[in-house]
Amino acid sequence: MRCGKVLITGATGFIGSRLCERLSLHYRVPYRALVHNFGKAARIGRLGAEMVAGDLDDKASLSSALSGCDGVVHLAYGNNAGRAEKILLSACREAGIKRFVHISSMAVHGPNPGPECAREATATIGRYGEPYSDAKARAERVVQRAIDGGMPGIILRPTVVYGPYSPFVTRIVQDARAGAVSLIDEGKGVCNAVYVDDVCDAIYAALETDRGLGKAFFVNADRAVSWRDFNTTFAEMVRPLPRILNVSADAARAYWRSARPSLRSNLTALKRLAMSSDFHDQLATVPALRSAIRWTKVNLKKALSADRVNALKNIGAEHASPAAWTAWPDQGRIVREDFHLEFSNELAKTLLGWRPAYDFVAGAAVTRSWLEFARMLES
Image 1 (cartoon, rainbow, N blue to C red):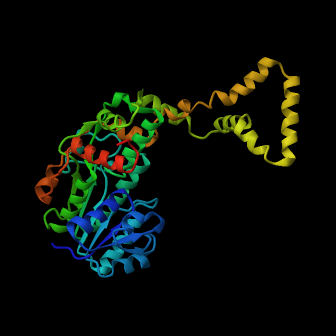
Image 2: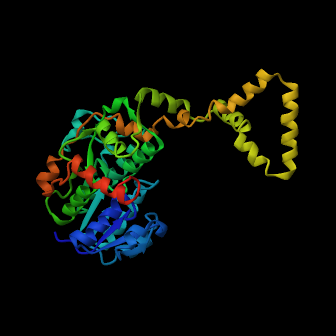
Image 3: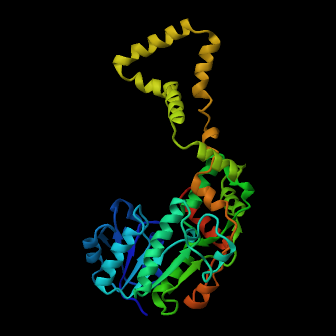
């Protein structure tokens, strides 16, 4: 199939913006970008892209956006996964869309998939109790039911997508510039990295070919790397070289379990706030409180022993060190980097006629050029 105009949802995101650039400058395919927030559309706006306001919750806006389109690339991800896809697919049926390409994720197989998930024919999708995985799985199930019901569609499951503007990359560089980058379990996890242009090429192939209709495909590089390689490659682009710290995945999970809100944690936080010098400084900007705060401090020092005064000061100080609060990786990183399965891309190469153009060394080199251009690195 040769697609006419294509509607892109999620066009202002990391992958969506790059897809718009590739459609304009490389593939030469007409497209329309569905934009929820025009404040985030500067990157595609410079392309002279056709942009229309719309919302995945608003079928009327979707129907208007689909007018004159033959295909849809659905990249948008929101808080109403599943419901949004139902609304969009309903509008697509009414508009007579000839090709629906849904960009899912390897996350549909959960945070700890078994070896059966390495290939599409045996991969399973379930419910995992992990918000992102469950949301992506819910959305993909809705799309698959529509495809089974006659919607001409293809599902793509990209893995860890990196490149210019990638939040994975910018997070590492920002941590490195702050002085330290952490690894989870020495970075032994498997990173199924794929360069963003290879994902765009897979999307273009899914729009153009009639082979593979109705199927789902992994989109990843021919070889995975370790998370140590991924993190340190970008961290070591920074000068001076940052420290490389190690964090246990089990310890990080335990930390986040203990960080869940409770009466005790709320009281501790309030106590920490009450002892915070920054908080006192802000209160002191209120004229009516300034003298009261000064009087309280003076009289507390008179009434309490020196040891007790120092102990009170240390309540805030013991939690004030940035290292104590920034060493723990967020929960998304724990899920991604404590990962032990390498996916196969053979089905996409066989049926879509797609082949990744970048290994990790080549993709990292292009990304470095952008980091220097963006002045995140010294050139």
